[in-house]
Length: 191
Image (cartoon, rainbow, N blue to C red; front, side, top):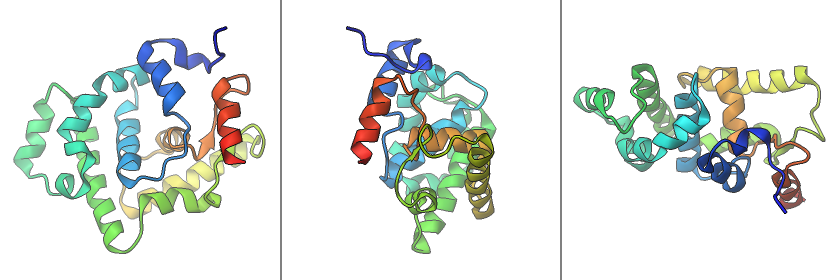
């Protein structure tokens, strides 16, 4: 019998795999968090399947998301990325990735982390959107708070939509449909 999934996940094999293995799974690894933030930034205005198609190229071009390396990219390296066919060649998104790496390096030097920034707001536990936060105003408020905090630290291209998508992708919010098999699996892991 076919497992029931979120509607958006059935458009391609890439989407299906991402949905079943990664989307909404609580993530705490700093490099993986930065990668997911970067992919969400690259996704703005595009289909998620497009970003997944470029994921390997983005990962390679950004040195497997090694923050120290990215934060030290020269102007020449940045300009080479603008021409790199492995990437979605959007200058603003490439620039944001480099600048966000610099922000994270500074954050780490001050003893903070992206993990703490996004998870501490929510008591380190995923939000079950269907069980704990059903008021759209509440959802907007908590997304706006994270967004403002990140912008205040200097993160670029982290508007409310990108922030919310990021929180979904890293499991801060369990936004799987109630009928999706992953919803129950993730709620069970939380318990």
